[in-house]
Amino acid sequence: MNQQTAGKLSMFDLFARSWQRPAAVVDLRFNTNDTAVAFAGADGSLAIAPLADNESPEKRIRRSADFGQATIRPRKAPPPPLIETAALTQSMLPIAVGPSDRFVVANGDGELLSVDASGEIESGGIRLGRPVKGLDYHEEKRITALSDGAALHLSHDGGPLRQLESAVDGKIDAIAISPDGLNVAAATAAGLAIWQTSATTGCDHIRLPERPVLIRWTADNRWLACALETGGVALVEPGAKRIGLLQDFPTPVSSLCWSRPANALVAAGAFRIAAWSMETPPLADSRSGALTTGRTGYVAIERVAAHPSKDLVAASYANGAIVIARIGSGDELPVRHAGEPVTVMAWSADGNHLAIGATDGSAAIVTFPPQIFKS
Image (cartoon, rainbow, N blue to C red):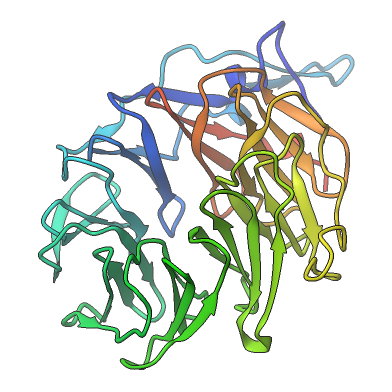
């Protein structure tokens, strides 16, 4: 990785577009064609930023004719304001990536709304009638999964909702459709429930020592990683009925992700980036496949986001610092030295943009020129 800076400005100062929202940013999504990112606020509002930038970092880089040294000038003007919607609910706004360039959100009455990149809102034709606690959408299969906290409901191709039967005690909120669209997993009070999306009855229930608060599938649909309520990670292989528990975290795991290029699981919750190779998955021994990543610090990692096409991971510390590390390497590239704690962070599908939301309502998109990361 290479870094070019101007004076004492940080990479964030030079490469980021930033905006201030009235409430904490609690979630964000890039749309499927990588033209916009939507920031969901704790006040129920939605704000959308186009990814196109008239003053992108690449346009501001200059290379000297004499020595070939690259420099970048700061932005001349602040970025255009976000496209804002009125508050759609009075609390957290469930959001998912919708078809084409659209986002799917649920208002306070449990009605699903479709929001395009220009902020135009249309009814999604689905109404639960109660506040939605969990939401996911699978574009290829055109499946919508949503939960009111007590039960899981599916809609195929915008059709009527059908409630999935379950033998587990409700309290279903965190949900995730598998990448192939054949299964949907949901957190329950006693562990993890997995249904086939083509069926209405029966589910596999995997008991865990605690309630999951996050669920992440691998791209090949083989593994799930679940962040547990009071700390630790459950690694689950549903097909083989195998479970591994990673419990030696000094703080609760508030974020985890899969790196497909590195074939690795990455988690927050420690004083350095925690990562494991899935070539030797940590099922019986948490040291199996452990990958030393980044540097040990004095504050905990709170958010991680794996790059979609490189073996890189972005990580944010509790003091708001943001770094990028190569998985399995001790080197870190500082993006921001300090700031408000990050609540959510994600890469665009092309890996050129890192979107960030924070507790103070700040929203940002960091756009990296191609020469920043070596192959």
